[in-house]
Amino acid sequence: MPRNASKRTSTGVSTSGPSTAADPRALDLSTYLDTSANYRLPGEITPAELGILLEGGWRECRTSSRLIAVAGRTEFRGRMGELLLASGGPYGGAYCITLATFATSATPSGLQISCSILASTRALLHRTFAFSTLLHLDAVLGTERASPYHAVGGLWQQWTDAMANTVRDPQGYRQVVDQLCSFASECAELSARTETRS
Image: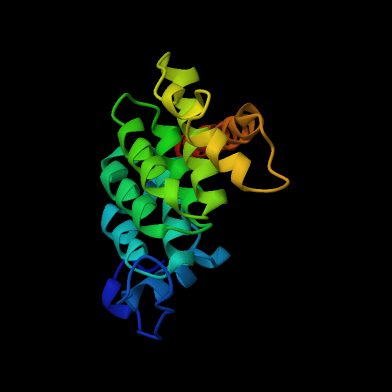
């Protein structure tokens, strides 16, 4: 991507997603980053550019969240939590995975809030990702933040009882989060090796 941001032109962007007034620069930036001629490693993308993507539609936000995860940009933890709580749909999983890759004691609080808020909604995929990410973080950090939700009569049982054809054992979902976090870690290692050679 050209370093001179003034060379970008505004072509508009879908306003669907977390932002009701998406930044029109997000589409241009996303398009630049998606072409091989302008390829850059996640660690080379500036916080300002990631912020622009996060002001776009849901596609740009998901792209940014993946770049943040691979680059280990923990300064975006708060923003990821905000997007997770605001998404309320199937796109929350991307923010859950990004938060999970940070794997610190500060991460679970936003996910717990998300589980509680979603208790009265039908966003099953969203809350399943949030809950399984809590399970992943418990395994990594040696905590038991997910226990209240997994207790008999807890939110997890209420969710699965209310939905047909739902996998009852949340550990299966947690394994998916484990695998996605492992993949993000492998990408981060590959990116770091590439930066060292360049």
